[in-house]
Length: 346
Ligand SMILES: Cc1ncc(C[n+]2csc(CCOP(=O)(O)OP(=O)(O)O)c2C)c(N)n1
Ligand SMILES: [Mg+2]
Image (cartoon, rainbow, N blue to C red; front, side, top):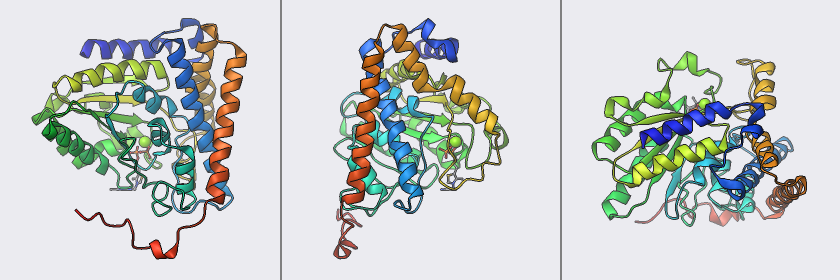
């Protein structure tokens, strides 16, 4: 297991950068990579549209965009099996779309409309889908890590073979409850995959300034949790590492930790003074390391026609526009619903 994750790490590093196409990997295969390209592009276009709606004043409250990080969630999702569970932070729109949730329902939740996943009462950070095994959407930094371990505990208790994937940022990775969660997961050998999305910054604090650990994949080492560091801008490297890690978790060997080295292009949330990094740094990542451009180059190198990629571009643009239209026409919640769906009666 550890060896295959390391291999994924190496291949991610080897193929990182602009010229990826020339060293095409076939970790996902041509069809799988085409699908991943579609899914990453859908997230990007959806998020761009959400940014526009926010600018028009149609989205209230918080809104954290996932632009730049798409390869992480898409690469991991391609490695999951039916029934596996996902939980994440407030930067969650990409995770929802990757699990197959309907873009209309997600966007309508952002605009606070009745057609949204939480009937317009949850907003960007609070959406769930039992059907797709998506457990939110959490605004308290690090809280989803403990909850993800709880999901894994429930699976162990019920005797099924499901794996729970819990995503969190590198900022959250220094939180106390994360280490409590590591301890319990390792002690009970729970089937949980911890994914640290290291996009280099908490709100405005670089990881160098917030973490004494500089290889976050080793953060579970005191509890014997194996880890891998992966190029999170390379969807195939993410897929390969996640596949090996999930097999480890499902085999009963306990938790696994992957640090995905990624980057967010937009601000932390919609208001961000952006004083903590230079424009050049962002631009360099966008032009040299973009996960979608790189997948595109690789697909062309594999012989996929420009026309096929153009059709995907057109399709996802339509899906994002359709979601935006729905999110503006779906009615607002009825005031009579103020107290419904607030508490679950057990
Ligand atoms: C317990 C708690 N402390 C502080 C905050 C405020 N806060 C919101 S996001 C954030 C930064 C988290 O950074 P990271 O975990 O790297 O995730 P990213 O935003 O980069 O996805 C902070 C400090 C919070 N929501 N919850
Ligand atoms: Mg971060």
